[in-house]
Image (tube, rainbow, N blue to C red; front, side):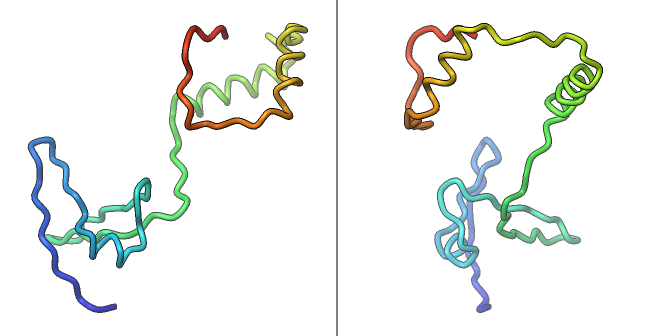
Length: 106
């Protein structure tokens, strides 16, 4: 890979914009992820591919849920109207980028 030298300015919030030639060389675009590794006095920037994020709160909740399910505790049937709503939604296309308006009942 050819050497590329670019300079980025750190904002007051500690943010930088990766210069376009660097983004292109790494093959990252909007929403892409990069990792920063400090090696001595140098920072190495690499593209991240499919790195999953582990949230400790979610991990703990899922462990608790798994324990309840395996022991049969705190388990009940879903309300019939919720089941019907879920079944009717199976065939509808969902656009996850659309904002939710109004109240949402959980």
